Each structure stands twice: as C-alpha cells, then as structure tokens.
Image (cartoon, rainbow, N blue to C red; front, side, top):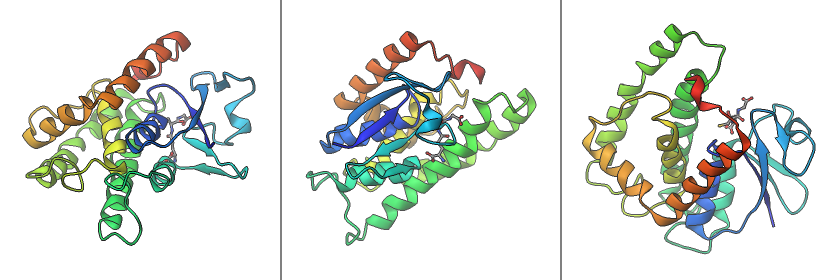
Amino acid sequence: MAILYHAPLTCSLAARFAAAEGGVPLDIAPVNLATKELAAGGSLYEINPLGQVSVLALDDGTKLTETSTVINWVQSQSANEDFRVDPSDPDYFQMLRWLAFCATELHKGLFRVVFYQEATDEVKDRVRALAPLRFELLDSHLKGRDYLLGSRFTAADAYLTWFFVLSGYAQVDHSRYPNLEAYRQRVLSRPAIKALIDSDTQMDLDLKQNLFAAA
Ligand SMILES: N[C@@H](CCC(=O)N[C@@H](CS)C(=O)NCC(=O)O)C(=O)O
C-alpha cells in the first residue's frame, strides 16, 4: 500500500480527503512539520530534501511529491467512478486546472506567505489583499454548481476543501461570497472530511506543531 507522509492540518490532509472520498487505502506516516521528525524515527529531509509534505511513497519504492500530483495519483486509484476522473474524460483538464489553481493561487500564493516568518506583517497584508479576486473567481464559477466540476465531489474539491481548513488561521475573509460560502459549508460537512479534520486537529495539538499561529 502507498505510504503518505502526513503532517496534521497541512496540505497532505488534502490527499487524505481525496483518499477518504475515493475509498483509496493509504498507510499514513505521521510527521511533525515543526521539527521535521517522523513518528517512526528519522527526519523528513531524508524523505524529501525540501523537508516538505506531501510525499507519497509508492509500492515500487518511487516517491511522488507535489500535492496536486499526489492528489491526482490518489484519485486515479479510486474504484468510485463518480469520484475518479480519467484522462479520457473531458472534465479531466478542468480537474487539473483546479488542482493547479489551488496549488498556485491559494496554497503557494497565499498560505506560503502568511504562515511563514520570512514575511513581515505588511507583506502578509498585501498578499491577503490578493485574496478577493481569487474568491470572486471561485464564487462566480460555483454559481449553479455544487462542486468545482459540477454535481460530483472530485479530487479538485479535496484540495480546495483543505484551503478552508486553514483560511481562518490565515485571516482571509471569504464570508461575503455566497456561492463560495455555501460550497465551504457543503464540503466541510461531508462526514469523511469532518472526521479527518477532527482527528488532525487533535494530532496537531498532541504534536504541538503550532504552525498556524504565525499568520
Ligand atoms: N511544492 C510543494 C509544496 C508543499 C508545501 O508547501 N508543504 C508545506 C505544508 S502545507 C510544507 O511542507 N512546509 C514546510 C516547509 O516549507 O518547510 C507541493 O506542492 O506539495
């Protein structure tokens, strides 16, 4: 079984959302991202020279990094045809588009600044000011759609759902975008998502990662 190196509440949680929604079994190797320690012993740097999650170790020993790719691999293994989007499906490129949007415009574009100490408060606020345009785009896309690709929850939604796990800590306000807000409530109330957020919240406290107070 593939092993996901996972630090609670971080982007590897998006891969876990995809695995849970798609019914794809993964072994979880817990990581403390604050100390880079693996629960099984050793350092995350031995697994990924950048010291980052997500990392997926496949059965043949190869490793995948880049959360959007890890999520795509996970969804490709799903037997649930409502969840899985094959490359032959016209929606496949829409799924890739939204995975890339989450990775670049939201994850790296916003969180990479507001949760890291390299940026001053002024820089963080200037980056937060970029959020409304992204939220408007999502809000207008979600008009008349339950999920990013329409009526079905897919891997793209797994990544966007994770954004809402941390958006409060990041101090970005999306409450005045009605379609986005309805979407946020819809995805966060899915039982598998809720259960994973609850267990990660506890694991985060247990590990004392304290990563998101920095925003
Ligand atoms: N390019 C990577 C970036 C992943 C990333 O930024 N992961 C964060 C957690 S959400 C991390 O490991 N941060 C620790 C660090 O950058 O030192 C990807 O797309 O997966």
